Image 1 (spheres, helix red, strand yellow):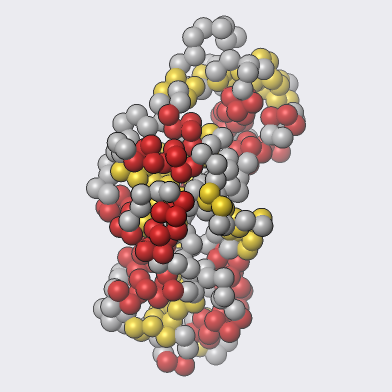
Image 2: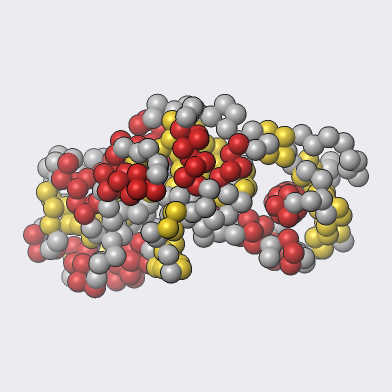
Length: 341
């Protein structure tokens, strides 16, 4: 259906007035910088404001900025937006100034709460006005138990405000993928039978904080997770780019549910400065062309590579386009392994 006419392209940074980058899985994994991330983001910063958004609540914005400078990025604390900052933004709508807050988490969370004028406790016996929960590597059973005690009256859940900085199920580390704050929030949820309000990705408060901080009307958000980064950017009406250097990989792109689908899919951040091929769909949406690659749906269930092209990434983009356009889940198709291996 598609001839070999010239491929239409766009530049990912066209019209963008701020680039907002996730950290874990985009800039670094544990103590290691991700290849091509630092030089690419420094190049962006030559002409566009760059901000860094993290759901990790264990460290202060100053500590995050220092780490990023060690990687070679020119970053100040004001360039870092953390989920504790978003949690404080949300907390202001729930409790009075100077309220007593039970904290589950580390220094990053305590620092933001105290800067905002809140008092901090670790004990439910102090009668806190709210519970705020964030990730820290040393969060233990005792902290989770204190949160559970504060969030119930005897055996029944109460209505005390409970804010989670984020609910990422996992976190990339240098040794692999580890449990994230979502698993810890789930432990408290299991004990008390109620849900926390979430300030970080994929909820909107952290993105609103970023847009206000950088006075941005047309930001581009870069993330490595569909369920937090891309979903959150889409909810906040921000253009999104998924980079395949962290948690989610090609097979996750193919299976991305509506609402979690990125505007761009790239292998690494060098692609910010490269022409990005526009997806062309056939009229009946059963065939997609990206670059020189063409992928189509055959007999309702078979995903077929009609034209290989030169780029495995273009084949992935085309395959995801026809699957997404079908309105059906990926398990309804037979997908060649080479599209996601």
